[in-house]
Structure formats: structure tokens, C-alpha cells
Amino acid sequence: MTTDGLVNIRSLYGPRETMNRLTTEVEARGMTVYARIDHAAFAAEAGMPLRPSDLLIFGNPRAGMPLMESVPTVAIDLPLKALVWQDIAGNTWVSYNDPAWIARRHTIEPGREGTTAAMSAMLDAIATGAASRPLTPELPSPIDLRH
Image 1 (cartoon, rainbow, N blue to C red):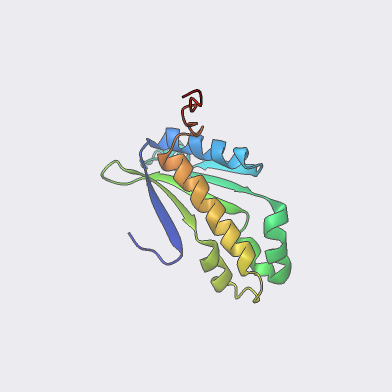
Image 2 (cartoon, rainbow, N blue to C red; image 1 turned 120 degrees about the horizontal axis):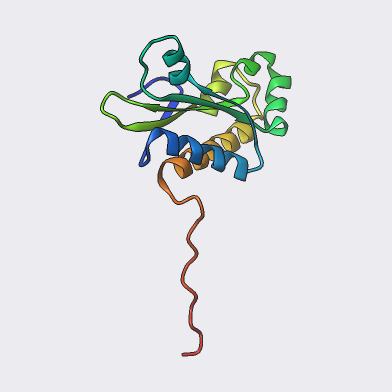
């Protein structure tokens, strides 16, 4: 599955659990959730079948606004979005646009690489956290220093 600029991470959890975990990961980083769009629910209302497909729109204005000031068209791709979806085999995925791809798409001026690199690292941590690791990191066992 390769689509230019799209990052796909397979989840160990089902669609609903993955979306709940994704929302928790986003909020734990102090970001704002602007919307959650359940495409499958809208399809069902229209009498059409659709495998789970749930879009989360979120962000931090302090991170995105400098890019929008640089190139106003970047606002079409911000705030950030992550899609939780299920493939035909029943696998659950988290997908998002790579911020470096967004920067190339809009020809962001040189010198903003730090912003897009930070956004990429943050998105990877959020998606990976939602898809594969415990929400609360396990602490190592206490070390007994008496011996």
C-alpha cells in the first residue's frame, strides 16, 4: 500500500479501539480535537455499506500557523488529520499525510524543515501509540538497591 505522501500504520486493535486510542494520544499531547467524522455512519444513514472509516481532525495552532503564514494554501492540509480504517481483510490501519509531503506539495520556504520534522515525529508517535503500544507506558520494576 503506497500512496505518495501517505503514511499507513497497521493497528493491533479494532477500528473503534484504535480511534479511541488515537484521540487519547492526541489529547495527551495537549492538542485540540476539532472534529471526528464517522464516514461509515454517514454511509449507513444513506443506506450504503462502508467498512469502518473514521477521520480525526486535530492540531495545535502554534505549530501550524507559521506554515500557513508562509504559504496560505497549506491550510487545505491543516489542521492535521488521521484516518482509522479497515481493509477488506479486516485489518485496521491509521493513515495520515506526511508533513514533509505537505511541505513539498505547497513549496514551503526553506527554514521550516524543523517544523515539519517535529510534526512528522509527533504524528508517528501518536499513530504508533494508538496502533501498537500501551497508552500508559509501563514503568520498569523498582530496583532493589539493598543488595
